[in-house]
Length: 263
Image (tube, rainbow, N blue to C red; front, side):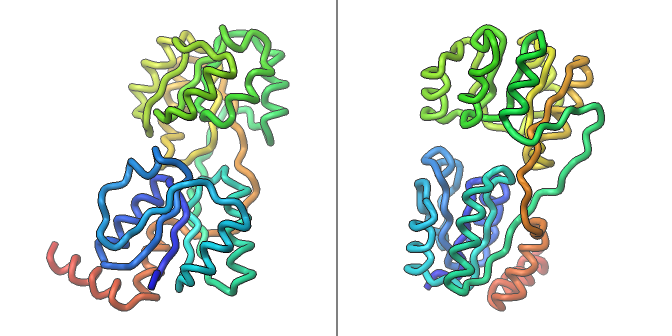
C-alpha cells in the first residue's frame, strides 16, 4: 500500500522523500523530468514516477495508489500543477497538504504580476539582462528587443531545457546550465562576467537562493525585476509537514524518536 503520494521535484520534495525513506514509509514521488529524478539517491521505500501529469493523469494515478495522504511540494510557481493536484484530491476525498515556502522581502525590487508585464517593461530598458527565471520562461523573453545579444540565461542542466532555449534563438555563449542554489559570491561572479545591469528572478525563497541573488545584484548596482508568485492557498512549512507525517503515521513517529535517541 502506498501511504503517501508526494508531488514535486523541488529541493523540499527531495528532502521529504529522504525523510520518508528514513522512516520506512511506503511512498510515491512524482517528478516532471528525468533530470529531477536523477537528483534523487536510491531510496528503499520510495518509488519514483517520472513524467508530466495533466489533470486526468493525476486523478488516475491517485485512484490507483489510494494513498492515506497526498503532499503537494511542487514549485511555488507551478500554479496549474498545484491546482490539478488539489482538485483531484477533493474529487477523491483524499487529504492533501500544500508545502509552502516563506517569502522573502526584497527592497528596491520591481515586481510584475506576469511575464507580459515584465517583458513590456524590459522593452523600455537598456543594458544587459541576466535571467534566472528558468528555461520555461525563456520563450517569453524573445519579445524583448535584441534579446539574443542582451539576455543571459541561467537554467537547470537539463538537455530539453537547453535545447528549447537554443531553438528560441538565445546565444549558446550566454546560457549557463547549473544546479542551484548559488552563494552570493558565485552570483556576483556570474553577474559581473555578464556585465549585467538587470536581474530577472522569481521569489524562490530560501530554498531557491533568493536572498543571495538580491545581495549580489545590490553589490553590482543592478536593477531587480521580480516575477511575482501566483496566488496560492495556505500551506505548511517543511518542518510542519514532517511533524504532521509523524503524527499521522505512528511508525514514522517511532522511527523519528529512535533517531533522536541515537543522536
